[in-house]
Length: 401
Ligand code: DI6
Ligand code: FE
Image (cartoon, rainbow, N blue to C red; front, side, top):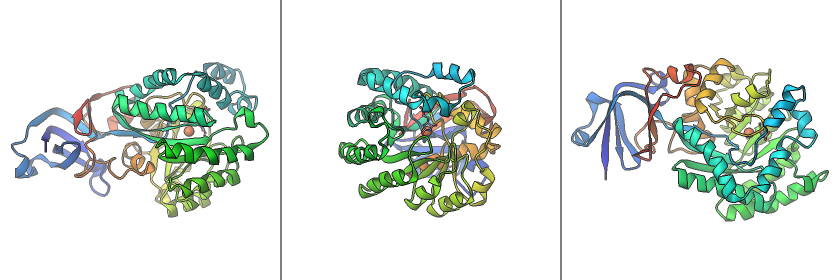
């Protein structure tokens, strides 16, 4: 066993229930190989580790490795042109209905080879990694046909392997209706039910998501996808209540969803159902900002019902071309009025929960040794600054990277 002791640091452990941020001043953190063995005040460091090799953090703040729990970062092309159209007056929904939007990214993604897709997506993953992200969820959903969805999920897996970031994959075949199924959404759902088991059998799927919205799939269609996920023992998540209240959160909660995401239009019934199911609310301030939404997700209601809140980039070409999770921390505070501590919990502890990962998200004995050292004096500075990156070092599974 290879033990190391990290000292001359403070640690925002993000463990719930104690000090704000679970903060430990003058901390020591012990890693044994890829796991955290102990965290606490340095003067209480157990004798067994006092002779272990020391890593001097020179006064840095340690936090858990950041977790981006909702991205669509594998895609071809970009949508800068659509951005121009929107600035000339077209709305996101109008563009989507006119065959642009997601459909245009589907064309570009299908046209890209696996290597091209890998190279383009790697740039985005590296940007996240440079800010201390150690775990990223990546959704498919720009292929929308078996071979194309497979290509995207394979790229996601390869990115995780080759870039040294933990990647979880989510099958989002129910993202949009592909052109070959125009006017036949139920036939496309039939096709999804054939695709999912095949991709799952290849080890490419960790969870299943759908876009339940008036411009996407109905609750009844979403339910069919969820039944198929359940039959395979796969957890579900849902893009719910982004543009309207379609009852998606309630539906997802019935399936014990890991998370419901977006939620600008969710009502009390949906929030109550999520609380009962233990689903995390994943809020996406980048999409809110970029689409210039005005309806805020109901933060007060989520707090009142004790629904854990996660924050994510939603990295995608149409509604959130964003590769900065630190910027999302700031926007969660400025746009959604979340407290910096809530926002940081949203990219650590609660983001882990939104992915069903119990082995990370806090600095605690037994957890994965995924953590970041930052050149800041206090944790609120991570949410306070706009466009700064005070990361000093990332430790992934016990190894400096
Ligand atoms: N909701 C979103 O915000 C993204 N997908 C989704 O279901 C947008 C995807 C895109 O516009 O390409
Ligand atoms: Fe999304």
